Amino acid sequence: MLHVRSIWNGAISFGLVSIPIKLVNATENHSISFRQIHTEDGGRIRYRKFCELEDREVGSQEIGKGYEDSDGTIIPITDEDLAGLPLPTAKTIEIVAFVPEDRIDPLQMDAAYYLQAGGAPAAKPYTLLREALKRSRKVAITKYALRGRERLGMLRVVGDAIAMHGLLWPDEVRAPEGVAPDADVTVRDKELDLADALMDTLGEVDLEDLHDEYREAVEEVVAAKAAGETPKEAPTPESGGGKVLDLMAALENSVRAARESRGEDAEVKELPPRKTSRSSPKDTGGKKSTSTAKKKTASSPRKSTSKTSQTEKKSTKSTAKKTAAKKTPAKKTTSRKRSA
Image (tube, helix red, strand yellow):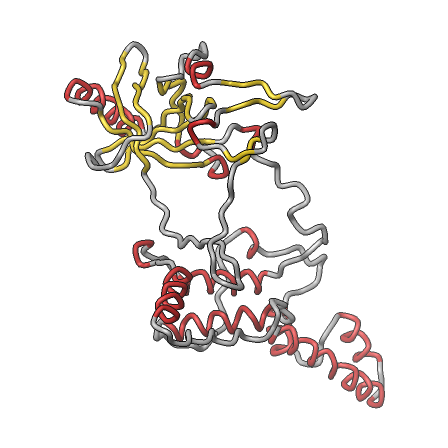
C-alpha cells in the first residue's frame, strides 16, 4: 500500500479525535482503451483546445475553470476560490452517524477507496476506529469534499484496513418508475419450482474464479493482427432472438444444461412442493382435491357424485348404462389433473 499514490490527504473527524489519513484508490481499471484513427491512412485523430475569442490553440497551463450562468455569462472560478470554501469537510472526512450496513442501498454505492494511516501518530486512533466499527457491526456515514464537490461516504472494515465507499446523495438515485412490466402476469407454482431448481443447480461461485472474457478476446484479436494473422471467427450465437416461447420448456432445458455442465444427472424430475407460502393449500371453493377424488373412485367406482348415487337407485338398467357412459369423461379429467 505504501507504493500506491494517494489522491487526497486529510483527516478523519471522529468526535474530538482527529485521525490523519491518506486516500488511495481501492480499485483499478483493466479495460482496454482504443485510439481514434483516420481509417484511410491510420493517422491518429487528436482534439485540440482553441480559445473562441483569440481563435488559437492553448496549452493546459492556460486553461482554468469557469461557471456558465443562465444567461451564458462565464464566471471564472479559481482553485483558491474553491480552497477557501467555508466547509468543515474541505480537508476532513467528517463522521456524522453510525448505521447498520443493510441501511445503505447498493444503488448509492460509488467509487471505493482505502484510508491509509498518515504516519505513526495516526496508528492508535486509526486502530481504535477500526475495532469500534468491527465490534458495533455498523458502518460510519461521512461527508467529505473531493474534486470540487462535497460528497457522501461510508466507512467499513476490509481486512485490517478501513475502506470508504463514495455514496450518491439520495436525490441522485432515480425511482424505478415505469421499469417493471405493466401487464398483469401470473406465475404458476410449477414455474417457480423450476426456477428454484435452476438456482439450486447453478449454486454459488467463487468470485475469484470469474474473469473478463471480453478483454481476453480483444487481446487475442490485437495479438493476431499484430502478427499479420487472421483473428478467429466468433461462434455463431444460438437462434431465438431472446424470445422465450415456452417458459416451462426453457426452464427445464436450462436445469438440464446446468446439471450436464456439472456432470450431474440431467433428468428433470417432478419436484416436491417447496415449504413456502405459495405451496399452502388453496381455497378451491368447495371442490374436492384430486387425491380425495382418487380415493373415492377406488372405494366406490359407481359413485362419482351424490346426484349420480341417487340416479342409480331410481333408474333402470338402460339408465345405468347411460350413467356409466357419462362417468367416462370424468375419469379422464381426473387423470389430466394428476399429470398436470
